[in-house]
Length: 278
Image 1 (tube, one colour):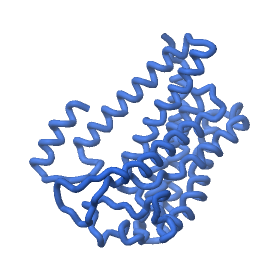
Image 2 (cartoon, rainbow, N blue to C red):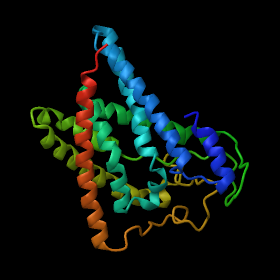
Image 3 (cartoon, helix red, strand yellow):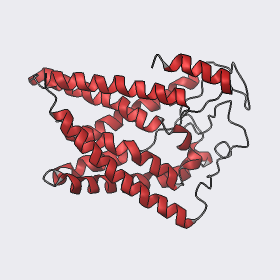
Image 4 (cartoon, helix red, strand yellow):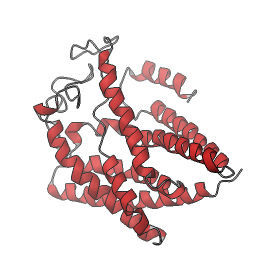
């Protein structure tokens, strides 16, 4: 994380200012964030291995809270491709299938709490809603260009993605999966995640593009000052990301495969975490 700061300064001096997430310095920063947050999870699991009663329950709650920030990276790293205008593209679902099922499967595997995935995504949703509802209350103005729209208050992140829906489904089905083989569980986890997420997020995207969502609750009227007014996101138009129906369904099939493989990696990660002792 510390190394990424001077690297980022050099990058901007060499190539100019940008607001991209996936630049090399930012990727280095993200790796640092992952290492620190994963390290915190390992420390908590080490303490849990010898804790009992009330202390174990407190550590369990702390584990769920800390996992929320791993999930935040899984969603935030692809932020540029997950705005409202991309929600009717297969690429949107493919990118979110890379890491989100991994962390959901891992917390389900390692946590004693019956509703672990729901709790993690619930905290994630609550924190994002707090950003959405509180940040616009405070005055702010742009300090560097380009400035395409007049901004007088902090611009919050968009309304949180509905990943809580597949998390609830996974927790509901958890007892049925308990005695299945790892690969069978992985296939089911991946299919449930992508199927439920697609079923709720796709129609919700239609609502977010409508005038009915442009209020303080859903916040679709907020846009960063550096986004041109001609951008499809600002114009509330869905981007044509895939060039054909064949490409769309090919990517959706790939998204399903990736979700299943991600869930398999998450189950293995959760099993490894469960063996941590101190």
